Length: 207
Ligand SMILES: [Zn+2]
Image 1 (tube, rainbow, N blue to C red):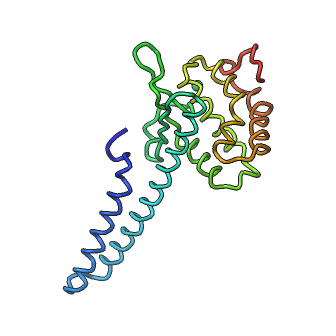
Image 2: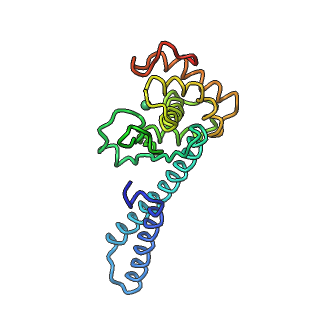
Image 3: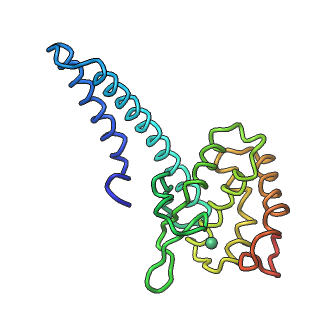
């Protein structure tokens, strides 16, 4: 995490937009601005405001996902959602990553990819009645990472245990019991069987 990812970011963007607007008003009053510059500055203000609003809802979603992952893991979980800009710097193909200390123990932080967070955000703002496959997988990814933070480090075990928590995750995120059960059943029957061998165990009692 860097300073620009802190909750300060929407405030900084709003301040920047305000400064531009103040400059515009000052420049127009003093007749010192041409039309093209004014149009560019107004467009820039629009982009900053839009970015600030997007950042605010991204941050709110992160807080919501962290709260639910904490309940699922039974230990504090801080979810970090990658921004679109960060996807270029991520060499990982996994949908989520949990940091570990030098002893291999989880540190309580779960990084979710931009696409997983985007799908989760879309599902959160939907009526949850007809989720896409990607949205259902994204809900499971959150459960899976919560399993890691709870101390289940082996991929096969985390994936198996997550199957038993998916419905609870979905419900804590706002799905009805029926929607939550359907989502968990979809993952268990349509996605889990085609996961790579390392993510499955022959003895998974929830599969
Ligand atoms: Zn994993």
